[in-house]
Length: 288
Length: 265
Ligand SMILES: Nc1ncnc2c1ncn2[C@@H]1O[C@H](COP(=O)(O)OP(=O)(O)OP(=O)(O)O)[C@@H](O)[C@H]1O
Ligand SMILES: [Mg+2]
Image 1: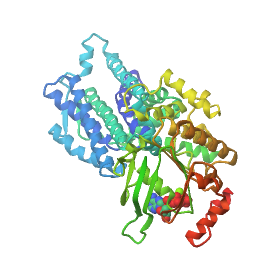
Image 2: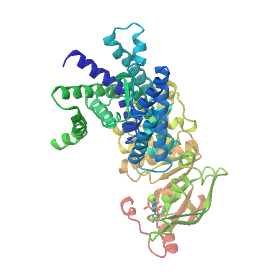
Image 3: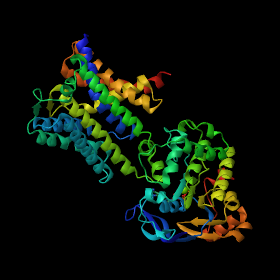
Image 4: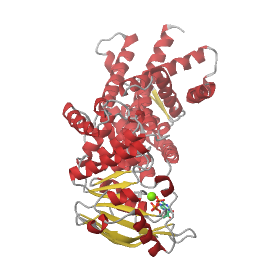
């Protein structure tokens, strides 16, 4: 694996790491298996790409991507908390609808952004060495997201969110609506996922309607790899683990490609990876 | 302060499994009452407490708390003025969170949620003071995850959390039933202390007749979804377990049977 390969993996790990933090919020904090992300990642990409190509500032376009993601999360929240549809199905319904909506937003299946300005090119104009500029900017963004998320989880609202996933009965007896908290968590999570999607589009130079396939599995893989390697001592460590997990995940993908696997085999490999990690605790128990 | 009028609760209404859990039940509770509730299995004791707490909607009747109709309010809205402790020691706390984080949620119960820090040195000071009253050393373990505590420790913590913000009403549903005998005594003492200290109006379901007689100032016996006896302070002093059993037989028509009584006497 040469340097360029390593850098690319690192960059991908960081840009998708924001999405993994979103997945961490629903899967681990809320205990809500939310499949919306397969639709909200390309939604963020579609919104950002469409706005950039119609002349908007790329940074501002990310704000709209974030809001769009939040809206998508609120739809899933509505389906689950108001219409009482099961979590898994609520997410699938939103995700499926988003495929059509994303196509509508983009007007075609693919929007190239190569000739457009993006956050990375804006950052380079500040005079930072090309090879590292993308990584530096991504690091700044993801650290900002991590610090904000860590801090949030230490506020009263953050405590309530954590307890909602942990013991809903308890949180209700503390006078807090579990429905409101679930809604809130889904909005927060999908905002981050869509922000990640917008950044991905700008990073890779295009938005594609099918780019969301397998997002949830990649996100889960990152969360689980992080947990296995970093442990779950504190929020600070867990979210650091999620980001590291995302980077390691992209490295293993690159490695697999280097070993001669076809790109089309990657989804299978990722699923296998998640299965292995998810079952390790059980296997360890049986071995004992 | 709590007034229940003609409360009825039917489970699976209109189906083959229709089950009248509460029938036209009325009850008036005065400020500062500590009422113990006894009754055979399936009498409707838990259903009564769940109806007050708003776990499910009721068929008919009204529930007034401090003069306000609460039977249409959501569970979490009523919870602002109602404290609860369940039979299951795992039910009242968040296991993955620390003792101080759990207590912080209980402290915030009377406020609306905000983006202020969940913890502060000031809050920790209050927590330590409250925890030291439990006398089980939890004041030195603020950052311990609750899942690492024993059932008794967790139930003590739950009891403290439920009474922390002086609720109008405290609902205890067999909250010592899942604990070992030594711990049961501790939790019972703690219950008496916390209730009398803050003068909290309380409903306590128990399967231990002796406790029901000894604790509180009023005893209610339920059967088939109704209150069959309501024994006030003065009469309650002369009660014995035998008398209570006799009274039950007179109304019920047969002996008092209770699968858990055998274990608790
Ligand atoms: N959530 C529920 N769904 C359906 N039926 C219920 C539910 N809760 C209680 N019941 C039924 O209502 C009746 C009263 O039950 P309840 O739990 O109130 O009795 P209890 O007096 O608390 O008894 P125990 O001493 O066994 O706890 C029972 O017939 C029970 O099967
Ligand atoms: Mg019961």
